[in-house]
Length: 277
Image (cartoon, helix red, strand yellow):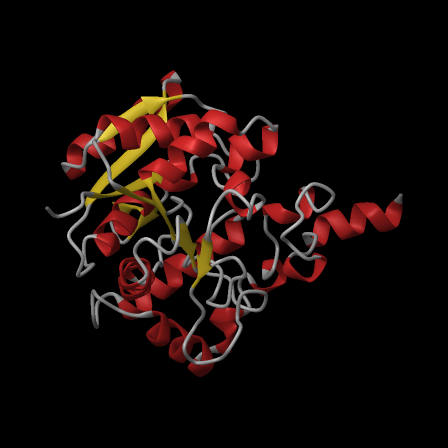
C-alpha cells in the first residue's frame, strides 16, 4: 500500500516585518500561488494543504486556497506545531512535509531529492531535512517526517519556541528521534550567503525580479537557473544580500543545542541598535 504524502504549507497574513507577504503579487498571481505552482511540479505524488489560522485576517488565504483548488485547514495562529499536526491528521497523512510559505522560489527537484533520501532510508529515520545543517540557498527548506514522529512531538513539546517553529523538539531530542540530513551534492554551502526566502521588502524585490527574468523563459526554472542569473546580473543578488544568513535561529541560540552561532546572524538594523545601545 502506497503511503500518503501530505505537504503542509503554513501561511498567515500576520508578519511583523512584512505583513501580508504571502499575498504580494508576482506576475499577476500571489506569492503563495506561485509557490504552490512550483510545488505542483514535483515528481512525487503528494497532497498539498494550505494551513492557516482561524483569525479573520486570514480569510483571504482561505479564499486564495479555494481559488487555487488546494485544500485548506484553519487552526491556531501561534501554535504552528498544533496547526501542522491537526492538518496532517485531518488529511490522513502517513508522511508529512513541512515547507514554509516564505519559500516561493523553492526548487521542486530539491523537494524530490529529500523525499527520495527519506524513502531510500525508510525505517532508519523518523525525520529527514535539508536544513539541519543547511547547505542550499536559504528558501529551499524541506522537512520530512513520519506521522508518528510528528504526533510524538505534538504530544511532548511545550516550550514556546517548539510550538512556534514546529520541528525544533525533533532536532533537539536525538535520543528519541532518528534524524537524517541531505546536503547539496555540489559540496557548496550557500545557506549563509544566498537568500531566496521572504521576510523583508528587499526579499520581495529580489523574488519579483527573479520571476520576471526567468519565468517567461521557463516556468520550471531551477535553483541553478537562479544562481546563474545572479552571477550574470549581480545587481539582483545585491537587492537583499544584506539579509543573507538572517533567520529565526538568532533569537533562540541560548535554547537550541543543535544550532551553532555561525548558522545565523543578526539583521543589519539589529546590529545597528545593538551598537547604539
